[in-house]
Length: 302
Length: 209
Image (cartoon, rainbow over all chains, first blue to last red; front, side, top):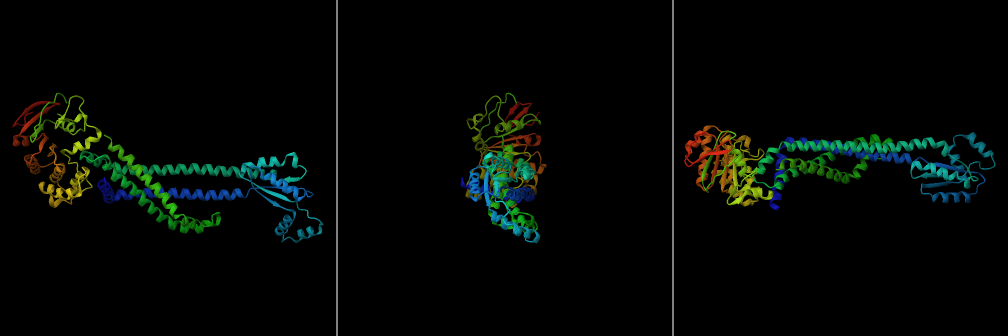
């Protein structure tokens, strides 16, 4: 048993080495596949970060009438917090609003001076509400418009932002579903290319498989070395892919980090180097092993 | 094939002759269990090979050595490895292999070509590797399907002499051929086939079709 295992590995390695050109070609295709898969993964990571960043910028603000007491505002806040749709609420008191306003307009002395001349704080207290999903703002708005709050609330800025919020929401879902579909399609294409390359490599060995059968080799003894070769395609392909990716990320990262929410792709890659390696290794080995098994099976049938 | 019935005794040297398409190869394929007979039985060593299970076929084939017109060597393996592979497939130990393969190579006179790949060997040498490979399991039966079909006369006689020697060492040899000269020079038992039927079966036969 163990001897057979050793022999299978030995022949797998020998065949891989002796079929030099064929192995090189197959490994190259494997490398291309793994590169495409990595790029797709990175695009997904970046796109998700961009979308999350975009989503976090959407919110609605509720402005309370000047005569509303802080207590009442906080009561509304705690009631809002009970809603399932609400992710977070920040309370901006009248004073804070004033400070923010002054900070924002510190280069505009005319405005500041006219504010000084007023004897009271004209700015309203507000609640900043973030929903879990972009499409939930409408229902939150509905809740706020109910009769109970009519006396306290001056205005909700949902109506004026409605269009922008809905458009952004649509873009986010479109990019997500489109990206997923495109990723799956491209992944499928590269998988099929590799699968066929390996099948062709084994097609060239179909006579050999026949001869082995005639010599009285068992199915596993014939299949084994091809399986070892398939796994080698995956293993060597993964190593080469990582070696290629390292400098690519190193050079590309500083050029794109400016307009991406992820600070540094290269350090992200470096930090996750092992997960990347194992992910690609699993994909490569499964793809190589599976393809050879399917291909050999055809010629092993009696 | 129809109504083919004959016996081959142990240690006999039998030639099967007939034109192309007469059924020589089919007969050998039936014996190797590459094909199943639609009717009738084939008994080898008292066992009906029709009842062999799929799993038992590789072991059965190892009891029969076969050589072919087109040699059927593994192109990516050297002469030594081609012979060793057959032993490995039979689950023999490394010691046996390192001991037996050189012996077989010297029997077929290929010791100095052990590390050559098939593409570096002449036709006769390739066929000798194939014979060597057929002998690794010390088979009771050696079947040769037109073994000299691709060879020049000189190499042809090398191979035939080798087959005779193997027969003298105690192996049953079944030789399928359509080479008149070989048959006439051998002076052994000849079974003649024509259109799937046995038309003649004589000791010390000659080639007449």
